[in-house]
Image (cartoon, rainbow, N blue to C red; front, top):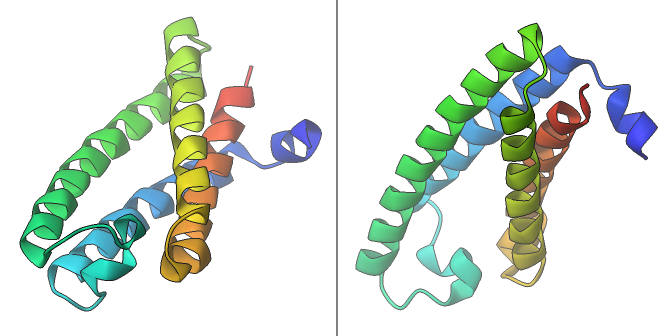
Length: 132
């Protein structure tokens, strides 16, 4: 499995990581404009649209910040290997893997759509983490 992931070109990992962050932002924007019902996300546990609005806004801010960190990591990884960057990427892989497990325990929408988006993020970050 590790060898299969290592066969992915780094540029593919960079692009798929960018797509992951973009899709995550679009997903939350669709919830904000009520194209996706708020009961379909967060395991269906959000009690009101107003609460989900705050959650989605915070999620967008966090996603943008992590997206910028991802861009910085891709620039560093192209030029050199850095222990701190490697640890950060592995932490993101762990964070997104836990999120994937949560998605699989969530609503049908999360299982079918959100988990695929998150899997894209896991694979792209895992490819960066495996780079020597």
